[in-house]
Image 1 (cartoon, rainbow, N blue to C red):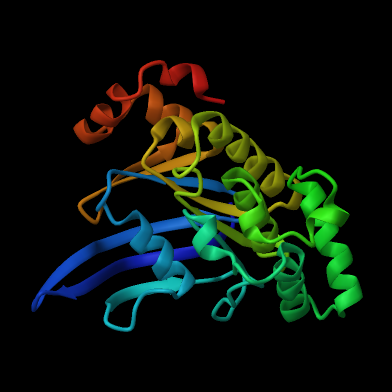
Image 2: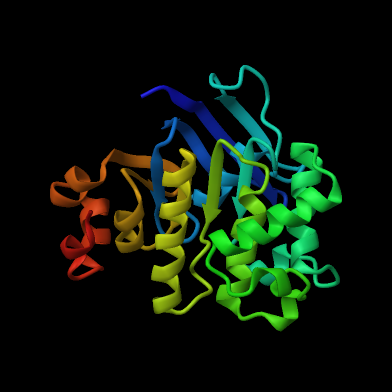
Length: 257
């Protein structure tokens, strides 16, 4: 599989309380074109730091070593056009004073050269694609008028409005209840399959990861513990830490697809 991006010996260090804390240590990983890769691990394992590093969103104080290469682009990526990012909390990622359709349309105008009429038409199309009712009316709504699940669907629509080659979903379901989580996972899987988009799905929940990903990479304390095809990793984990994660989710084998 042709890689969408290659990560070589990536390390990220933060400075906290006059001390340097290594959040990632010598990570080697790749994401294939059209692949759905899940990154799993406990809080503090480096999952979100990896996502922010890939998207170029780390704070200026972070020290970065190693390389992130994009052979499919041959140039640095542009957020919005090449990378779509779905954050954990849609209430924080959506502008509270802008109608949701305008927020989606802005992405299309910035990265697809559309005029406002075209961009609003696309916004309605995308609201329908993420399975929100009455998109023509909904595009005029504001985030505070929507439920948490609806806001996350809007955030997904905005993330794919620029037709990115890579979609990053960073704990995008953790703020939602269990039923809505499953719906959002199914929606993301459907969208990336339809568009041929690569997916980096970050979660602490190995059961959700197994539902959406072709491959899983397990992180602990900033290091890559093991990675492999989903079914093989679930059926026969090679590392004790991965086995512990599996044991914490009873009935996981029933979710593997």
